[in-house]
Length: 383
Image 1 (tube, one colour):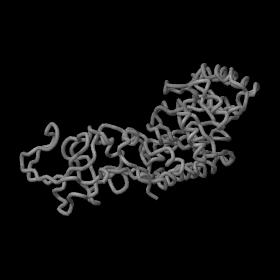
Image 2 (cartoon, rainbow, N blue to C red):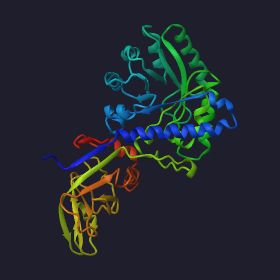
Image 3 (cartoon, rainbow, N blue to C red):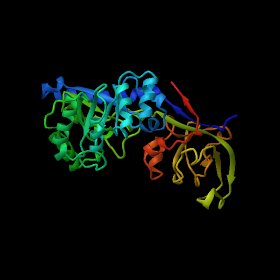
Image 4 (cartoon, rainbow, N blue to C red):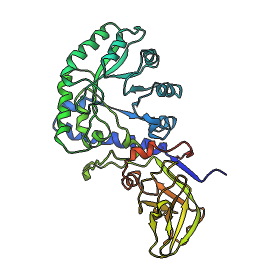
């Protein structure tokens, strides 16, 4: 039989999380419309981000789970082709834009919207055949300092794109940015927000500002254009972006979309003074009953997880003891006499600790754990 470990993937939880974000925006719209009737005339669309194999969940699973989203966002041309072949007919957004001129015909064929963040991309579009104009988002660098043009360059670059629009290379033009710190209450959040508005200078095209953190913490940012595209990622998978904390009236009920489970392979009883695992990272102070679990860092569970990291065993709370090894880890069974070989251990997800809790106990973030799940862990789809 196969090794007793699996990741349960829930498309229904993905769908639930999309609707939570949508409801969050709708509540904000209702609140704003009381003082500004013009808000009712704007439209908000959700582009579910599925980069990195849908944060480790599987691209095809995400296509099903995010069926109610208005678009899908990714960074690989191969992924956009896969989405079209799987039957996705709504919008697709290439978040980092295209990497080579040979990508442009693919974008044209599959009706893909692309980010434009460099002079090289503009030049490639200028030399492309005007087979079918594509929609673009002009990316503005508002402090992340990775991709995009500086705000003071925005007018010049927009003019260049408008020339390509007249030449039949480009269809619609929008503006986009990416917050570096939307999980924080900080002056530079507002500063970045003002920068994109000034760079856009009331241009009537679509606007895309909100990542997960901004969608949850600053949803009012999604009402500054007639057409607003939100780009939630990590929150759609049931994890909060970094240290985002929300006031009680802003809380959304996100569900975990990935649950990592494994079985107890063996049971050992330690005497006081006995240690377990590499480096003797845990030494028993009293008689301690431990379970050896079929999961290790080669599966994607963090080796840096410390003693006391929570787990759930047959529905009961317990904790990690000792150092995580390549294929196994050890948990405390002392207070669970009914648990033994074959018991189910939820390492994160539904029925166990949140992935963010495990990440925090490991000096990591939930993004890393999702994306770091390895191929040797079978994925099982649950409805």
